[in-house]
Length: 432
Image (cartoon, rainbow, N blue to C red):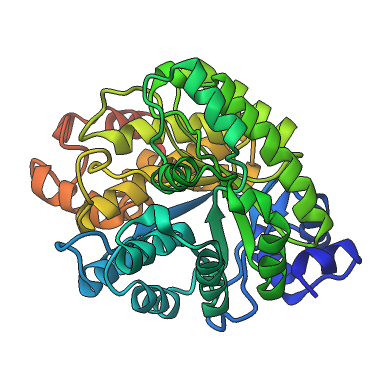
């Protein structure tokens, strides 16, 4: 019995209880949210070392970090270092997006070294294996693609990202509308290339019931990605993107009817004034399914700083109703991130998630900020560093950029306004 089926039958599982404790809500709140499709707990039946994680309405917004083998400059050891870095920085989930090398080995290593939910995008491996076997990814055999999907699920992957809603009708619409940047989804573009070359409908859409059978067999959560996600502001909310959302909404309904948990991933680039409308549209068309947001990036010119670009978009998206943020690193668009950039991406996404949760009015999230404010008021530097979202970085800056004053900040030193006022108002403060 899948977790969703249990929730629909009124049964509270151990996974629901664990998530409830971590979130500070009742197990019934989790069960009801899952039954309604507003909450998912990605947890493959073959995973033994996972800590259950709840994603969805009424819960803390979560963050995912991506790693994976790509090209000759990556290796298992480098990607494992990135996994360790992401986990230390506080990521809630890992996506292994390997597209080369020993992909099976990398996936198994990711699953064994991380206790958080792990997601993959099977089409990457299916296309690579087709290229190796036939000389071109467009010669991929559909049966072999489904074998790769089941291989990932059998290994214990908790959520599978797939482009099940990208149909030939939608591809033709994108062509007729004259997009500025037609396709930016790596997996989506390869799948569409296969569809065009073979003049065939998307097999993930055509044989969606088969996808659901695999997901149900291993209790895998589906993460339906949008092949038509906009890659530039000019294409945001165009007809192809919206039409795909309509199709995804129907696929959400079918997944729930089959007892399969599901969330939606998107959307990419968009102007700031489109964020709330996009999230609202997704929530309406996809029946409240959790929204796994990539970015979004609010400008096309943030090269080298797209972790900041995405953090702004992520905070607004969270406030508007998104529940899961895919991190973006400073290397986005220009190269593969190193471990330090992975760290920066996770921290930026966590700040965005927390800011969005505060805007949602989650009272339990205010305590962290209140504690920091109290530490600042009392000039308790040790406590401030402990409470910062990146204590190591904060301590480093405090140590290297402070003027040496034992109290006060680097800006004011002995003339610290807070210290002077505290003395005047006779407010008790802690020593530094």
